[in-house]
Length: 258
Image (cartoon, rainbow, N blue to C red):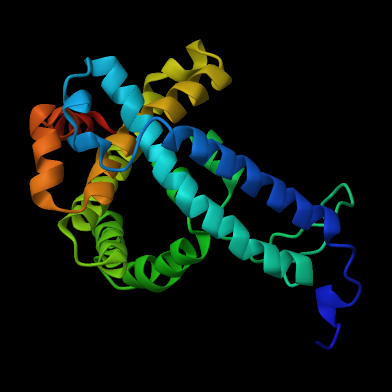
């Protein structure tokens, strides 16, 4: 209102707004295409239960993307107002290009290229992620004898309560915590082994992104189905494979992690 500070000379916001709107159009098209093949309760159909393991995994990833597209369209639409009005203007980058990311709900590129669980989560619903980080996670670490794992678990559970009192939310966020903990342990072990030097970085990054998308799609079915009787039935049909893998490997990683 006073045109002070970074808002003293706001550059044109037209191109930045049109860029976000074009991304919304692409997301809508993707959502329509995905919705022509699947729907959110597809997990409960006999067709899904009859799929072989690999087609079933690919279908879970598609259903995750379908669910994500709905939220992403809303997040991106919400950003268009602040961008167009100039509220999102955040100065200039090193190349002199105007940045319009001060108000930001989602990092689309971060979602696509995340190689760590925490990167994926921090690219999604950014304002809530930052609130949980600063007012729940870091405040716990300021107290004595508080472990990072316990602080992270409490943060995930606060997020679950924030979403609502459905069993699916609590299941999803608890196992998201477990997956994040597994990721941190595995990263230490792999880094210590020297194995990353044998494989090109971009190959490793692609593998990690695919791995975490598969796991997020596995746990996301409880976020979508919400009721214990529904998502437990699907996990039972898959013999709780994803759960068992984490439960079995975490103690091993804890023993050998530096």
